[in-house]
Image (cartoon, rainbow, N blue to C red):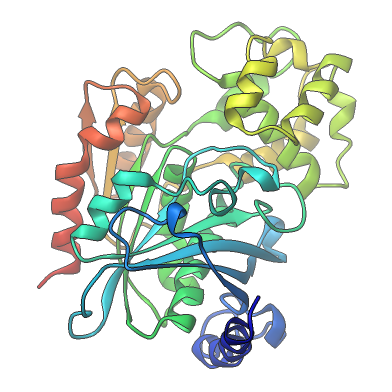
Length: 373
């Protein structure tokens, strides 16, 4: 890091303390206050979102598993030109599954949304993109720990505004797949957790839901599923649960094959993991059935809240999705309606990633409307 970068990082740490002083986390020690930036460095231009005028990586404080202080990393991208009055409106991007190892973090691989986020940037939105806790920072990433992900999404906005004065306090959440779950949990806690920010709404696509309702079936007898990548995702969940709840003897539930698979999962990004053990059945991971001591923390990690959506919500689902099957999302929608929540729900005759693109026009209209004139 050169002298100017060191000076910027030092100034950032001082500035952010004032930014978060009035937040809901003000009781935390200053060094642990959510949104506090601890490091800043340039992102290589080849990793920038297409069309970005600048790109930087931040390391910042947030809340991880069990709401304990933790660190995350993430990137900040600005559109070209001068910001509008009040600053650039912000989209906080929550990415889909990449793995749980540090080397899988989007700011490490340089794969941060690509042309998809470039088209949002071109509409005049600044993009902030968290890696989540444990991806590029200490510990194993607690995959699908909804509260941990959501805190990282919110605190990424705090951190970005601390180093970039051209950013507005108005922001929305945009997430797909794992990020769709993160976006849903963010939608229920953002206004209370960060009252100094103006959260306008949420776009959540391909949201993995109701997994906690399938967990009681976990065991050697678990039936084969006609889905894509399920064993890899389950291995990531187990790895994250083991890391975030060291008091649990997670290995006692695993077969010898399951222990080897989870150990591999902690080291391999998604494509490598799918090639290494993607054809292993879920049942082969377990030595015995899951019981309440492990089901309880799984529910806390995985469950999508059914209440608390106090800002507009756009929920999108692909009818041909073989990663997040539509029936699970339809149950989520029915449960949200039953809980009295109001939201926009759209389906598309597409698969998992394709739905992100198919929904783009409607999601753009939704975001434009929630930001207002």
